[in-house]
Image (cartoon, rainbow, N blue to C red; front, side, top):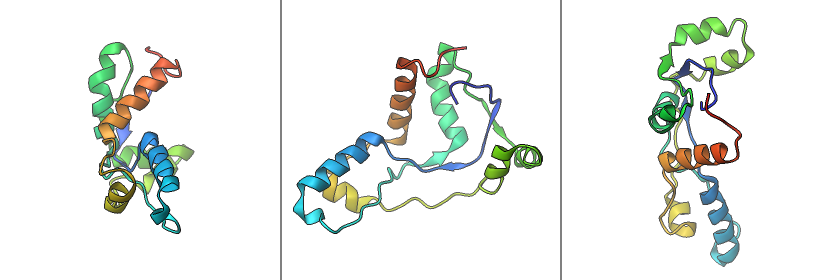
Length: 139
């Protein structure tokens, strides 16, 4: 979303977790004997639609020269593109489908002291890291 040239984002549901929470959960699980034999699902519980993500990133990074999309791609356009484009074909079935988020209360309570990074904080940290490492540069 930061490097363009995508003019619009499809309305797909994004479920994510911050890598810092994943690392903390792993370390905590290693340190707590009561976690032995348990499985934990990590989901920040703060999932959102791709256009919302573009809105968060755009609010901070458009003014710095990053071409973050401002529009939502209509379904019919993605469906039309899917006739030729493999990536659009892959997305077509997920547009507008809100997949469930997972109950993260157990992992938060048992391993993360009821703290997890929000999706917004995760997105900003990820973008800042990509910019700092010059993986993405302003246009």
